[in-house]
Image 1: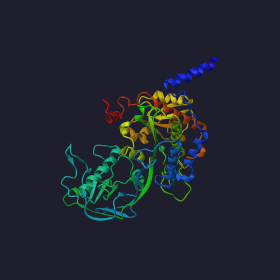
Image 2: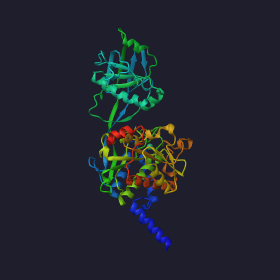
Image 3: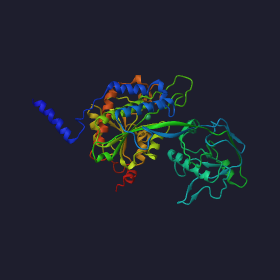
Image 4: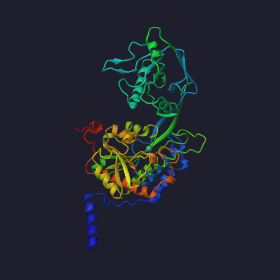
Length: 500
Ligand SMILES: [Zn+2]
């Protein structure tokens, strides 16, 4: 008798305080396994963005969310946010000469933009090709770029940051195109190996088609010439002849979408606020290490850990929330093209289906794998004032929390949560348990061995429950999460939400 009264009391107190401890969550283990096994199946061919397997995965997720009763979002096409991708492959043939030196395509230089061209004449050298009106800097000043091949040092002046170098490159192309240049070639001076850059850029890559891009036809690439000499010559009066021929990059449009669906919140006020649950469903496809298109041998990158586990967790969260919605509204967003450079999430924050300042949190899931089944690993654990909720969610199923493991990997800034964080939205990334990015983890990370058959579903069942319970606690929490003082995204957050 006594015990029963005790139980009732717990239930009533739990109900009255709205905590999730008493929240009745029924998880179907077989269903969790089903989603992971399907998404990571050989038939989906590694879910490379734009491939059939990728689109089948998106369809599977969308139909599931619909069947649970999740609602489509205004501005999307049903449950899809289509992204206008363009696949750009290197030109079939190209040649480059500076003075008497000839460079080999795919070895000494690459071209990643521009149509067919046959250019010959004096080369123009324009330092870093940088313009900063406020600082009175214009490296193109006094130069006639019209129809010319223009050489510039790679990178942003005064910065050794690779990300800044890539962003700077976009600006330089725009400035050069506006000034009439026919080609812009950056001279490689970046603080990481040329071969690394070459492997990454001298292959088929996906970009978002942009009809307003003034540099769409500018021939662009990079050359690995270690000597400054030829460019010094371009600066002096005699100049230096250069020639550049290209058959033009090979472009084709590709279809792929984010999948988006909403469960409206149950609280009349808090339902105006949104938590976004994200997980990328794309992976690196079939082919050589690092992905690409089919390569003629059995080498399917199944991406069970990366990120079928996360997507299955997202799906089951939607199912649980649809039955019993949390106070805040929840947008479920299965993202594409994460592996191509966080493109799906970047596109979403540029074209948000929900105004960004109404999104109070991004609950992301992504995983390289796990090597400790007593843990969950959280990137951004104590950065937004909700560490207690994460602990509570994990404790319920007897898992411990590891905060920001492998700091040297910079994992917080390597998954889709960072697209939201950069806009100021508090975010975290929830991952299966690991303490370090060690051999045991690397064994399956972006490998063909990342298969559904090699997973521990007893652990994943607990992991998934911790995931759902933590998501629930945040979506129900009376206080909005916000960046702790001094966090690198705090300023962006203040701006977004107009906080003092
Ligand atoms: Zn991933």
